[in-house]
Image (cartoon, one colour):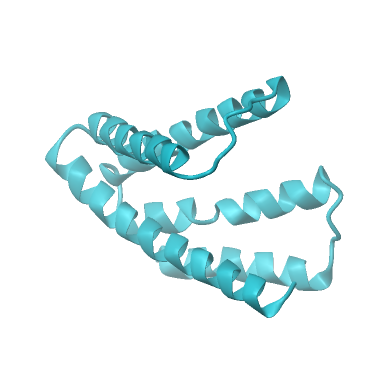
Length: 141
């Protein structure tokens, strides 16, 4: 990976981190003001329109294969389930606990990557996952 490619990776990762952090806080505030299920629907409606607008103004391909469309649809199903769960979770607990546990999605993805997709299992990855689990325990206390 070249320096420019790494800079883009870090930049977009940073934008994702900041915007999702703000999204969590605004989502919590919205779920305190209106029904959390309605807040979740509005949030994803706006996100969907933004994604559609991005497709229109960018050079994105509109070609969809059966496999790609099915996988994207399934990804949306899990994303929507997680979104609704997060908004409803806000009404039952603190933003800190709900958002910290929700942010652990990368651990699930890492485990699936190693167990199902054949990614290397290393002591470094295992240690990172353990530190992530410990951090959730510490933050949620």
